[in-house]
Length: 164
Figure 1 (tube, rainbow, N blue to C red):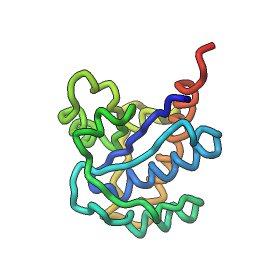
Figure 2 (spheres, one colour):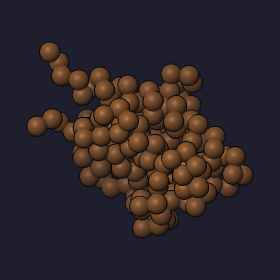
Figure 3 (cartoon, rainbow, N blue to C red):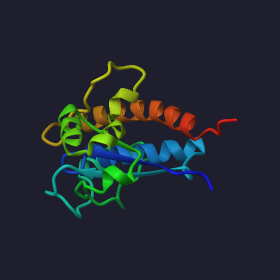
């Protein structure tokens, strides 16, 4: 049986950026033939929206590009997530700092910034929070997440490839 890699996307309330990243990565993995090898979920650092679907604007923007986020429900990050997931990918540097603070020391290598997988942007780039902005912000977030997920799929493919 192949080892399944587990990836957790993390933002603040788990209703805009991280569910978008979850949906984008799921489809890109499907297209790459890697969906059976990678489990993808998302969570928020706070529980403000626990149990709620993604923001309707995030869902609309995603759906226009073929990503269906409607079945996702927000949840808060759990202590057990640091053990369960191989990669915990923060949407911005504040989330990254929070995850590093919460993560047990030996597991801190699992915590990274999603945009660090983008081949086109400098390391340390954050995905901006579109919640209080105009609809164009959700499109920009999708552009950034799609770009980073392309690089992430390349990285995951290399992790999954048998070491012959």
